[in-house]
Image (cartoon, rainbow, N blue to C red):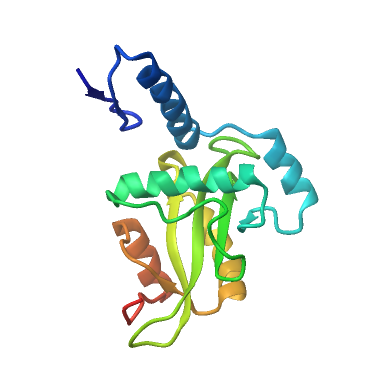
Length: 187
């Protein structure tokens, strides 16, 4: 009989070895995303890169996978039927992802506390522009300024970008306080 894990959301048949193995992998990924630990490889990147949180289709696969895990959590939280980031699936000039180093001391320096993606969009009835497609921060690190501290860099890089729905109540409040706008057209 199939069961659904309350932590990772995977439905599997415990009596099947292959299903148990799949569940262990998925469950571990979800737990590591919800409660991340500092990663040596990310700490080294933070030391050596001029833009260490930036991820594109040309970035190392581990960076793309870490962003994918956060995109999957965003999808799960908003009950989407698709994931809004595909490792190696986007052109560098039209999609830019970011992994957020934990600068809140919740998990420790070098832990990836969240992520988000910007995308260039053409709208049918509004000017083309950059959109902040999604942002997800681990629940334990929310409301601690992670996004606030990165916002000036985002506006410098992407200008007056749009926020794509769905927006949580917290993100809607954040946007209203900062005077940011939702897209006015249909992509």
